[in-house]
Structures are given as structure tokens and as C-alpha cells.
Amino acid sequence: MKRILLLPVFVILFAFPVLAQTVAPVETAAKQAILVDVTTGTVLYAKDADTQMPTSSMSKMMTVYVVFDAIKNGKLKMTDELVTSEHAWKQEGSRMFLNVGQHAKVEDLIRGVIVQSGNDAAVVLAEALGSGSESAFADNMNAKAKELGLANSHFVNATGLPDPQHYSTARDLATLAVALIRDFPEDYHYFSEIEFTYNNIKQGNRNPLLYRNMNVDGLKTGHTDVGGFGLTASAVRDGRRLVLVLNGLKDMQARADESAHLLDWGYREYGFYPVVKANDKLAEAKVWLGQAQTVSLLAAQDVVLTLPRSARAGLKTAITFDQPVPAPIAKGQQLGKLTVTAPGMDAKEVPLVAGDDVPQLGFFARLGVKLHLLLNKA
Image (cartoon, rainbow, N blue to C red; front, side, top):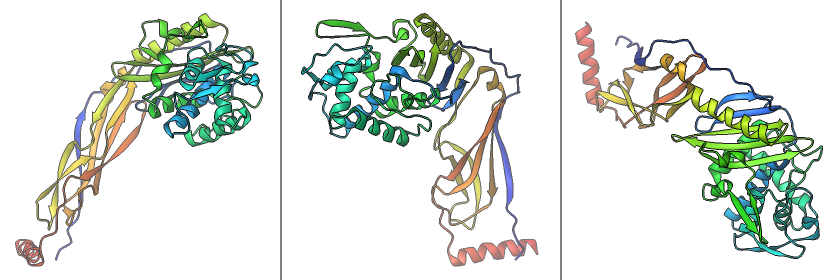
């Protein structure tokens, strides 16, 4: 029998004329910065994002992550009451104003850390989960940082107070912020609380963007003399979440204005574009010696892109597969690929999979097909 060659088939699903890609340039006075689209993981802007830096109170996000994780795993409850040690009471900087020996509920302490940036509250929680030792809790922070892929971070305390061995990067803090949002959606609301009163002392959240009409719902500010003013922020507009980290600014006003400016720039200059959804039928391939003549080709996963708005016109997709496909075919078997390209973006490839099982024809049926083919070509 003559050999049958499997020929590649190229199908252009849709294509748009390419326009010049232009993004309005942006600068920031921050020493370190990163702006990330959470859904696609696309970095929209970065400035020394992998440079080690003092994190100040932004490292309390890791403290809170470890606490939330302990609650999720049953090691701690929101209603548990923890005692304030002298070590916690003596903490410098921002405070919840706990008293020595005072018992405070875990939920109140969480608010004290997030809303009031209380160093005393952070240490109380750390000592509870570190068997009385803030240092042991810091070991837990570092272990969790490793799990989350924070490749350039190290923590020695629960507060973020200055220490040469206590550092992170803008990129790592953005990764941590995304992990908090993703892993603890039921607890994330604490980051958007405007104020919290404890021991008859009311304190407002230090995140300046919560007071602006910007759809910001977190996360954490930081300030020390050595680190300058910093902010890790997140916002959602039209279902699209961005995470921003800035650090090394000169004052509170610069922190507020620079962060607002970068977030607005990110939403204005970049768009979020769904291309296909998982299980969308993109084509049909002919089948060889199968109980069905064709098999559907489905996208194996969602494809969504974050692109400069001007680049959308240059978005192209193409599918590639061989046909006929020899039976038997198993549902979910990869039979081709979808390739997505756009100006300034590396090509993205997604598997195309069989939408159904296609059993092979029986022996005599296969023989009949082959004889028919042979006779027709004789």
C-alpha cells in the first residue's frame, strides 16, 4: 500500500492589521518599583525590581500571610486571645498601643497589624506562633517565603524594623501580595479597612490610595529612615487587578502621588484581552481508520493577554495540526497547537486536544478501507 503522508494544515483564525506599538513613557521617583497585571502575570513596569531593599512595614504582609495560613490550618483561631509580652510592648515605631499582660483577640491583632501597622501586635502574633520567640517566627517567615518563590528575600523579625539581614525586593513583595489575594480571599478584606479603634485609640489606615476613588483595596505601607517611604497596593477596575510596589520615596505625599500615577498609567496604557477559552472548538481534523470521520480540536486552556492598547490591532492567532489523524484517538490527546502572537510579545503556544474519543474501526472495516484506497489508486 502506498504510504500516506500526513500534511500540516495551517488555519488562520483571525488576524488584524499591525499598527505601531506605542506606550506613553512613565517615570517614577521611587528607587524600586514594579507594576504587575495579576491575571496574566505580565510586568507592565519595573525599576530595579530585583534590587535588595529594606521593606519596612511592607514585610508585615509576610507576617500576616503566616498568621492567615496558621488560621487556615487550624493552628490558630480568630477568637483566640493572646497575651502581650514585655518584648512586644517595648516595640518602637507604629503601635496598636497594647499594654503589658493585656489579652487581645487574634482578629483584633490582625487589624492592629494591617490597619494600624502595629509593631507590638505583630510581635504578639509572632510569639504565639513561634513558641514565644520572634526569631523562631522569622524562621517560619523564611520557610514560607521559599515556598512562595520569594527568591531574594530574608526576614529576621515580624515588624520590618531595620536590620541588615532583613530585606526583600519589589518583585518579591508583588509576588507576596498576589499570594495573599489568591490564597486568603476570605480574609483579604482586612486590607481595605479604613480605620480601627483599640484601647479607645482610633487610627486610620496609612494606605493613601484607600482614600481616593481609585478602586484600591490593599495592601500595606512602609516607612523607615533607611528604606524611605514605600507602598504595596492593589486595585481592581473592570474585573482587572493590578499590583504595584514602590519604595524609597522621600515623603508621604510622594508615596501617594507616585503610586496613583503609576496605577492610572497601567490601566490607561494596557488592556486585557481574552483570546480563547478552554474547550473552545477551534477546528476539526480528518480521522484515518476511525469510527468517526473527524475529531474536534479544542483549546486546552484559557488564553488571555495583557497588551499595550495600541498592540491589540496586531494580535494574531494560528493553529497547526497534522491530518488525517490515525485512530484510535483519546479525548484530551494533543493533536496540534494554537500560536498567539502580538507586537512586542513572545509567541504563546497552547495545546489543541481531541474533543472526543474516536475508536479505531474493526479489522475487516480497516481492511476494506485500505483495499478501497488501493483499488482507487491502482
